Amino acid sequence: MKDWNVRVFREGRRVMLGQVSERNEALARCAALYKFDVGDDELVAGEGGRDGMAIRPDDDFEVFPAN
Image 1 (cartoon, rainbow, N blue to C red):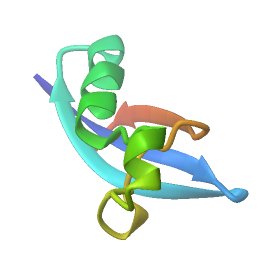
Image 2: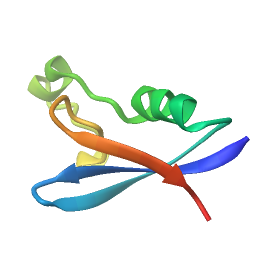
Image 3: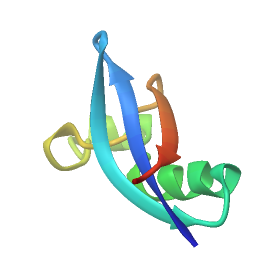
Image 4: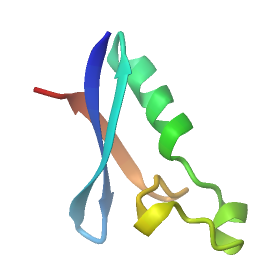
């Protein structure tokens, strides 16, 4: 297993969300969505992740190896 940092690009800046642990980048992206994704219905209901720390439907995000 390898640790991967997860960040989104929002309003012209990078926002670090946290980390996931997976074997490769593709699995890390899946794990990031599982852990941090929030859908439109959840946003309408006010469940946008703690302090906005979520991957929203229109967000671009990336995973990269943690050092």
